[in-house]
Length: 505
Image (cartoon, rainbow, N blue to C red; front, side, top):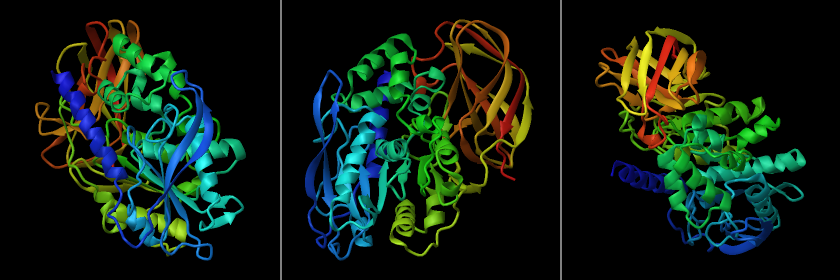
């Protein structure tokens, strides 16, 4: 019953998150109805639906746009399981600001053909290129050169993934991208690291995602999902399928984006956590682009409450309100106007990390790297079954913001042992709550009689007040990884333990 409840909650949270980042603005009678069309793209190779593929779009033209008054265009796309926005009068705030908008049904969704390859450069990356070619053919679109429109992009989750897929596929093919600015929300750096960190599957979210688009999956994903549920492992076929499908693949090949990017990520997102945006900000952008970019963390996104171990986060977006003056939509519009319309550059905070704390504040830092070390006593946890425990690290007042790590000599008394780690805050070990509902697994695949390990902890932001303490929570189980705890009963022992913390000074 608990598993069914968690999966139902994940599906509702997924729908809510996608609606929050893809919902169009109110209708306006001032702008013409969109033009719906489809463009030919690369054929589908999956045996479930082979053959020619068209990608269907809705083109929203501002009332004032013409051959003599050309305007920039924003690409838009939906979240996983969704469809493009085609209702007349949508996207009013962008059209009123002087942008055209082209909303895309991605491959396998809506009216577009084929199967979803989950932002594979060879498929969705090529699809985006075909859509850009179509945009470049419109006589009311501003250009910086032949077939090179002034171009931005918006959307979240899967609607953020297509932005990176299109831009990096162009760089891979030609050495540059025609995008001039991106604004991806709650999306990923590496799908393998997101869906199965340390090859331990985020069962609750993976199941919700699979259920959200039952007809869009390729044969590889369909078979891999079933294998993963039965074995508790991340199948090799899934690892290979997702390996190219995100910025991590392109970064490993030496590619970087050299355009401004507004990254908005849920710090309490437990599908694509904050560390995914940090990796994009730190690794996927050139230093020049990063100096013109913003990373904003908020409490939301694909955000489920962590029940076991218990977690907490105050929902909201305090940092966007501080930077943009009226929340994220205002911040996004100002960012796009400055980079695509030539509006006065009044935004500040570029090149920095703006992170909402679990308690509802906003902290801005120049680095998310650990800068403080704390020694902890030896820790022993059961495997497969048992209850979470919290070990005190430090007393408040204290603020942490960034990516902590744990270093220890680990002994695993069992086969394929798994434990789940997080930072937490409370007045005692009994009431300590996991910061922003995020845990990460550590896995020892075989019997291990003492080996030094560095264990990544979730990226967080939290202010620990006086009278409360910061704890390390260690748990043998996690409801985000339901059924994917240790394969056999046993124990995991950590000795010579230190925690490296990103303390705000």
